[in-house]
Length: 232
Image (cartoon, rainbow, N blue to C red; front, side, top):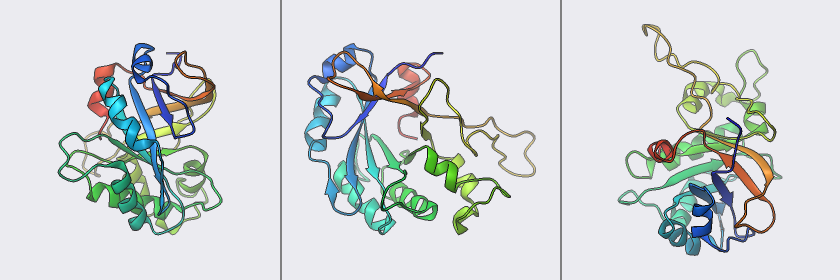
């Protein structure tokens, strides 16, 4: 299926005049930047969340990870997102793992995701947003993996939904999401490869209700299927 924008991600710098118009244009969900590092909170996040939910859109929050303490960043993200362990209306949470001046290691990424998972309602599991950086730092042996956190990384990341940044006409699914899941040596047969949860296929998408360009994401499924996979 040819990708089309049915999920958008944004931050305060992206103008969103009307969430209801997004819904009418075929958008199913919005993933908004909530925080970055230890101290930054996106100033538009709190006001936009109820507006999107009122329009009938699924809501998500992402944290831009840096190389500061991952446990402290997880706590900052949880606070900025507004989710709590007792929350009766949970939403998607995602770790943004990408190249930056304060680039985190793969180990810090794993520690952040695990810390988020420990702090959220049952049934919510932190997703991973990444592209080039996950390809560079997470490689099968003997692929020259350069991080001591490789041990157990395959199983850890295979169990997380991948929100892939891969601009172009096709998605090139990275390892290990392109690899069948082997639960144990006694398993009768491996489970299918997890594949991609969301595909960010463009950073210059056009959508009628939005002025300018937008990051364009594609979920290959129905609205009900997206809802079923939104939390874990």
